[in-house]
Image 1 (cartoon, helix red, strand yellow):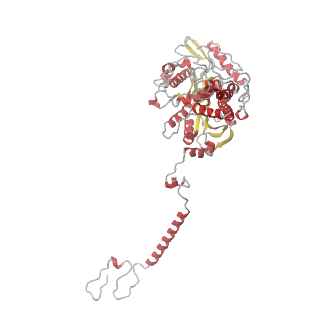
Image 2 (cartoon, helix red, strand yellow):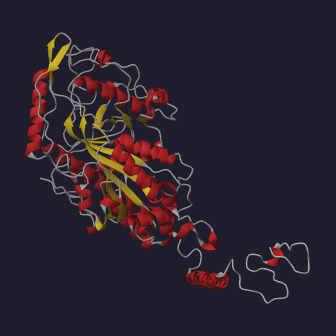
Image 3 (tube, rainbow, N blue to C red):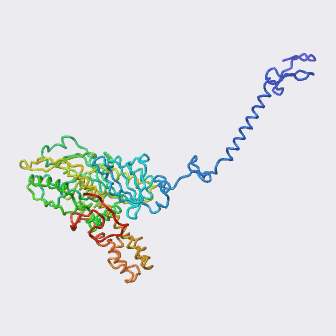
Length: 580
């Protein structure tokens, strides 16, 4: 503060006096501020910075693309809303394919072993028949390998999931998350260990003798079933499990089995999407049993025949039972879901007691499926271990659980038909013999062959699946010819395809075709003949579901190519399997 010479009281500077930059000196020119000598320069610099910032803000706004042009940009789409790609777009990006290539959906064929176990990749023959093949890099997926291509005119994604239920489940979850909306069906194929015969060799508590030598199983036999059960889902003790040891004719005991979901979660997979699953299984079963399907399956080579004759010769010597002769001309038997089921777990077991228990689980799972929603359910659930074959595998329960959980999601557009195709590579217990009254032991151990048996099992399962796609290809070509020749029949065909599918339309054509459709008999005659010539007739739609598994007509010749011996199909509808 300063004193005015005219006043006796001091002057007090206020905020309005700008005391930060100058002092009041009456009747004199303002003097430079002693407290803020650099204020003017600071203000200039701040002004320049503001201009610079405003300029670059305008430039950034000018070069920014319109909102929505790049959906990935901060998750914004047109109009500033969050962008959510369609399910089809997600699949296009996942597979690296165009929308047109995925417009009609595709089949999904899954296998487990890339060849690390047996030396032959389980998908080998199917991939070899793919055309216009595109491979997804393994580094971009948790699956072991993905191949998209054309299989006799039908789009197919062939996937190696990796070995084990966890690997299979994770792979399927990834596939369904990305492409579930365009997957039309799922087939899981792999090799497996089997019960030596339908109903087993031994069946306690009656251990006085071995079961009669009825329907035995052989290397390369095929089980087609959507049903699976988890072998490891049990509550027990060592004492209960080993109570009958060393007798081979006893049933390991447990406190709770696979149906106790409250203990260990879902373990029995038999009823999800059941009708669609059985329909897909029926297609595979019926085609595999046709003359064309049987002729396409290769015959056993001398090495495999030697393995079989050795095993069943020892079993005959041990049990005293006469078993069917092992013939080189026999084709593999196709067993259906009323007779066999997967019993899965990452446990490669060998032993009659475990095989007996596995058949218990298989019977339980099959009964749950066949009795589900059926008026005659009580009759159909009266199955026991004496009626079935246990198929020891791993991946089915992992795939089934992933698919079942996918079907429960609100976002799932539709359910996907699914089944397993499992082929016999080995048996799950050694030949046995009776040591004393009611007491059985191992007659002789037979070394497992992880090369020859597996190679043949891979060939027969591949032929089963490829025959289905061949039959569809032939039917589509024949129906296209009919439609091109006659417009009225084209409309008739379109109507029946929409209502019944190929199999149902074949039955409709065989019955006359005109009933309830307003069509003239003359219009249906050509349809009926063409459908049957295409091979979509009685063999595909009759003998369904129960009890026809071990039958079938033996065909002569051993050409391992689609259509051998039953008329030459078109070049588009052919496949080959290199096996010798």
